Every structure is written in C-alpha cells, then in structure tokens.
Length: 300
Length: 243
Image 1 (cartoon, each protein chain N blue to C red):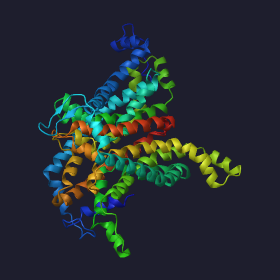
Image 2 (cartoon, one colour; image 1 turned 120 degrees about the horizontal axis):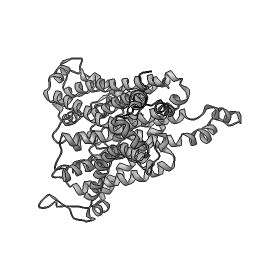
Image 3 (tube, one colour; image 1 turned 90 degrees about the vertical axis):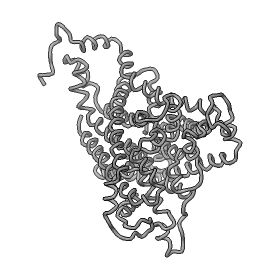
Image 4 (tube, rainbow over the protein chains, first blue to last red; image 1 turned 180 degrees about the horizontal axis):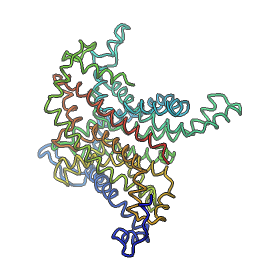
C-alpha cells in the first residue's frame, strides 16, 4: 500500500503533465476515450449500413453484363412491392418471426419466473448456466441436430410412427419449430432478470389486498416485466427475420434471408438484395423505437 | 432443451453413413476421421486465430467505450448506447450484406482483414456490456480516493480500475471469443475464401458423405464452446462477491 503513494515530483513525468492538461477539460478526456471505439463503429458499421442503403438504389443488369452500375433508381423497391413472389416471401418471413417470438415468450415465461422469483441464489446461478449453455452451443450444430430429427427417417417420425402420425417434415413449420427452439434462451435471460427485479413485497401486498392469483399476475406482474419481455422479443424477432441458414437446411421455401444470401456473390443482384435487406432494417428500427418507449433498453 | 444436442452426440458415434434413426451402433471411427481431416483442422486453427484477434480488438474498444459512457455525461450519450446495441439488434443478414457490399465496393474484396473486422464489431458489444455492468457496481469514490492520494491517471488505472474490472474483462473476452468462434451468419458474408470452422461445417452440410465427420466435428464444437462459457460464468460469479 505504501508503495503507491509518492509525493508529487518537482519535475513531473510526461504522464503527469498530460494528465494535468487533460484534467481541465472533461470534454477532451471523453473525446480521447470515445475516439477509437466510436471511430470504428461509425466507419465500419454505420458506414457499411450507408453503403447498403445506397446500393439499394443502384441498378443491376441481369440481361447482358451482369454488373452493377451506380445509378439512382427506385426499380428494386418497385420490384419488391409489385412482384407477388417477393411479397409472399416478406410476408412469410414476418409471420414466422412473429409466431416464433410469441411462442418463445409463452415458453419462456414459466422458466423465467422460476429462475427469477422462486429459485434461491445457488439454484438461480445453476439454472443460469443450464440455460446459457445451449445458447452458446453452436447455432449451426443445433440446426444440424434438428435436421436429423425432422428428416423423414429421423427421430421424430420414429417416435410418432407407432401412433400412426408423422412429423411435419421439412418446410415452413419446421423452420418455425427450429427457430423457436434456438432463440428461446434469448428470451429467457432478459425475462428472468426482469422477474428478479419485481419486488416480492409487491406480490405479497397484492395478495394481502385480496387479489386472486390471476389478478396479481395481470395487474402487477405483467406490467412490471413487460419491458423485459419486449427486450427479449427484440432478439427473437430480429434473429428470425434475417435467418437464412435454418431456412436452407430444413425447408425449401424462400425467406428474406435466403434471397439476400443468394445474391451476395460477384454475380449476384446486389441492389435487389440490398433493397430486400432494407425491409428488415426498417421493421427493426420501428420495433426498436417502440421498444425504447416501452423501457426495454434498461432491461437489456 | 438438451435433447437435440444429445442426439448429435449420439450421431457422432453412428457407424453407418446414412442419417437414419435409430442409429446402427457406436463407433469412434468418425471422431478419428474428423481429427485427421485437413480441412477441418485448418478451419479450427483459423477460427481460433480470428477469435483471438477479434476479441483483442473488442476488449480495447469495448472498455474505452464503457469508461466513456459510464463516467461522463456527454452530448449524444444515449445515442451511443443505442449505436452499440445495433450490431446485435439488427438481423445478422443486414450486417452481413452491409459489410459485404462495403468491402466489395470500397475495399476491393473480402479477406482475413474483413473477416476480423466483422467479428470485432459485434464482439465490442459483449465486452462493453460486461465492463459497464461491472463499473456500475463499483463506487466512484475509489477512483477519487486514488487521485487524492497522489496517483496519476495511469497509476489509478493500473492499481484501482484494472483489478476491479478485470473479472468483467475476462468474462467479456471469453464470451466474445465463444461468439466469434461460433459465428456463421455474418461470417459467410465477410470471409471470402477463408474457412472458419462454422463455414467448414456449413459447406459440408450438403455433402451426405461427409455428414458423419460433420457430426463428430459438431461434438467437438459443443464441448469447445461450453468451456469458455462455463469459465465466464465462474469468473463473473466469483467477482460478484467483491466490492
């Protein structure tokens, strides 16, 4: 402890002189701290998004040259809106994303409630690990596992055969099941944290005042965990909106992600892919703004 | 929740090349084949390299950002918090195609550099979250006390701040590495001809002959990604008792 303390030297070191210079101006200090990370994010991330947005207006010659010319045209957006194929793709993607989000919310609720409210600290930590582990297991591995389960000669059909039923096979329903499974931990974690923040005394007070269980749930618990619910839904919805890998592995139908992915190469229709990618951006930005109003950002 | 993963583990030992259920028995041959497969091995090495570099960059950037947001109220502060969230809040496909478009039009192509840049960008969020959470739990009086005792900012950082956020840095680094190691959604857009392990798996998913080896590799991935996460949990919960 004594080694740290040293009286200010008569000839201050370079770092001390620098510190004295910076001490007068908090703004300078903040700029110094922010310069590198913010510079990185603005240049690489926002810059890329800007290029993407610009690319949506470019022109791709799909007839003769198969190249992209950087002109300004609205043709890509027009194609997306007018072509029924693209409209159905967008509709299918958004619908499944919404279904996955709702399903995960319903499934996560009991698990998160137990984790956040009923379990003691030790059990809660153990449950945290149990829930986190599948989350961090490779996304690709999980998709591979489900492909094996859902295939025609896979586990699901083997289990259902004695009951004279058969599984859904590959297709949109398969995508729904797989995505709901994979994103579930993303919903459980914020929700559990949200439940943890609900003071138990409020629940007790509610019962003391004569409310029945479902009343307490509806009027006390639900409004309090709503921000956390929205926070979790950001992830499940966003991740489902853009998925192309699960889609390609367990279904032969197209989603927004598959179209974007298919067009990314040198020979791809980059402007159309960019335009199609702008759709999830707009959806998510609206969603994020609403979520911020609902207080979800504190719950992250 | 764990059933699908356990199934993959079982399939890794499946001697038959077809993926029917029930599996035909148990064998170690595919694990051996996977371990000696040159494509898989170079993919693992590349994944580790990329992970380390991306984590390193993310550690520096994430901590700087956390320090700035935590300590100072500046113009645009809430916008910065919003900005940091974007790489993980926007669908991966958007990040992927955006980076892809930018790198191809402005930088001339995809390479190891673009791959690392892509990974580092969303790893920053993970480190930022961990560090700022830790900073919020620390009383600010510690830093002031250190300055009062005559330490210059560098000494304060070394003797006071760093030990306190160290556990958050370690947890953040472990999680960032796990995230980078496993990343596939954005990676397919930024890797070019470089094959990380997830890309190798993805490429081989459509080759029925390779599937048994893929299963064995998947088993390896399950174990390999569980370790950093478990360690991160231990580090984070051990430090919860401090200050």
